[in-house]
Image 1 (cartoon, rainbow over the protein chains, first blue to last red):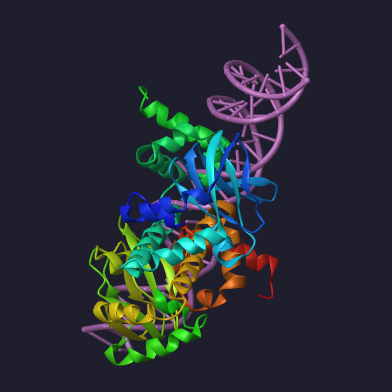
Image 2 (image 1 turned 45 degrees about the vertical axis):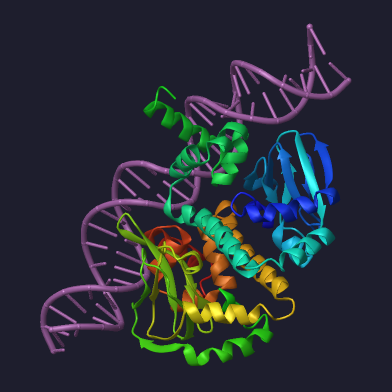
Length: 194
Length: 194
DNA sequence: GCAGCACGATAACATATGTTATCAAGTTTA
DNA sequence: TAAACTTGATAACATATGTTATCGTGCTGC
C-alpha cells in the first residue's frame, strides 16, 4: 500500500526507516503462505529478496492476481484497513527474505505521516496511481487478446516472465496453461531468434 | 472520486453542500461529451439525473469501461489529480442533469476536509473501497466466463441492463454484440419466463 | 540412485467467441 | 411523414480457446 511508493516519493523513506526496528525479518522457502485467503491481514509485507504472488481459489484451482518482487510492499488492502477476511492468499514463489510490519505500527506510521505538509495531496496522488494501475489491468482484458496481453508482459514487465512459473502467468492472463504454451510457440515462429 | 461516498460517509454531506453554490448545473441531451479522451479533466462531475458511461477508443471502436447513475460522482481521477490527459471519454447515455465542480473548488473542499478528525482514516477507507471495486472488476475477467459476468450484472446490478443499450454492455463485458445476443438467447431458453 | 513430482510442450477434439451479412423494429431528424 | 440512423436478433462460417491425454525433462526427497 503506502510503500509501494518509496521510489516515487523519496521523502517517505525517513518515515519508513524510523519503523524498521519494529519489522520482523523472515527468511522463508518457496511456496510459503504469508496470508491465507479468509483470514484477516495483520501485517504490511515488504520484500527484500525473492518474489511473491497473490491468488484466490476458484472451484479447486488457483487464479493468480498479481506478482511482487524486490522492494515491493504489499498488503491485502481491504483486509488490512477494514479488518475483514482477505479475499486472496499471499504466497512466496521463490525462497524470499520478507519483512512484516504489524498493523499497530503502520497506524502509528500513518499518524506520523499525516503531519507531513501536503500529506493529503500525497495520499491522493498515491490513490490515483494505484487506481490507474488496477484500471489498466482490467481495461487490458476489454481491449486486448490473451496473445496481446502476453506480449505486453514481454515488453513491459519481462522480469515476470523470466522469474515466474508459466502456469501462474497463464492464470494471471486468464487463459489455460495449454493455450499460453500455444501462444508462446506461435510467437516463437514469428521470431525464430528469440 | 470523493463523493462517490456520500451514502457511506454521511458526515461528508455538510462539506459537499457548502460547495453547492460553486457548481455549474447543466441539462444535457444523450451522447453529450463531458470530458474528451486526451484532454485534461477540469471538473468533478456529479449526476443528479440520467446516466453516463466512460469509454476509450480502440482501433476505431468504443470500449466501455464503467457506468454511472443518479447520485454518483466521478472524474477521470488520474487526469484530475495529476493534470494529465484523460485516457477515456465521459459521455451521457440518457438526457441528464449534471453538476460540475471546478478543480480549484475541489482543492478547497479537500483542504477543508483535511481538518476533519480522522480524515486520513476516511481517505484510506475510501481508497480501499475503490481499489477493491477495481480489483473485483478485473478478477472477474480471470475467474468468470462472459456468460457468468452477464449473469453477475443481472443479479448484482440489474439497473445497468435495464437502462444501458446492449452494445455498450457488450463492450464492457469484453465480448462482441453478437455474442452477448447469443448469451441472452441461451439464458432465455433456460428461463422461459424471464 | 530411484521414485515421484512439478513444469512445460504438443496433439486431438469440443466448445466458445469473433466476423460479416442480413433482417426487423424503433427512434430521430429533416 | 419519409428517410436515415440506432438497436438488436439471427445465421453461417472462421478463429480462438478449453479440455483431456500423453510425453519429456529436470528437480526433490528419501
